Image (cartoon, rainbow, N blue to C red; front, side, top):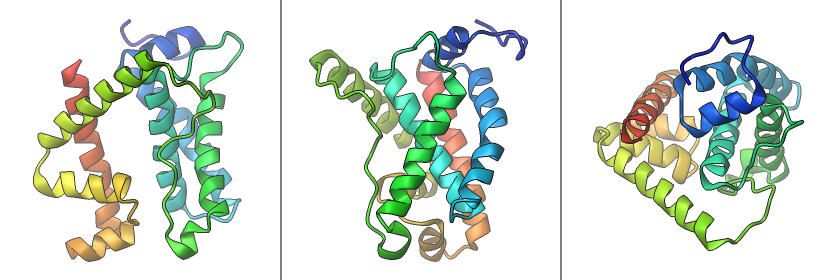
Length: 189
């Protein structure tokens, strides 16, 4: 499906586009959700940076669950509402775990449907392999930044100190590196 008129697509078409990793679907989600979610986090004891981190983690969890089949399209569900809920759960887990004070790590994913089916596990392993392969094609500094942020759960402040950069520059670099990784993953399809 090519980029539709963004006012006329169905939720099913959006789900299919996300499953096929079409760029217009990601762009739509960012336009629709980033600012409202940021507002919600700021009103719930967070900063804009906290909101961005929770948004990216929640969106990534949702997309991984689509890829692995743990999330299946439901006729009456609005995709943006489901993703907002994923992101909200990331932030609420963040607050509940007191990570902001103790730096304990977050769970890797929010799994609303517990499923141990072997086929789905194999699909997840395949996706992880694709991400690892894409990571290998990034420059060392980008790869290290992504690993520190998403895998080691370091804050942008901690990463900035390690890289000898300002926190705001590190935030931009993390965004740029994530976009490069996303493009590499899209090329693998």
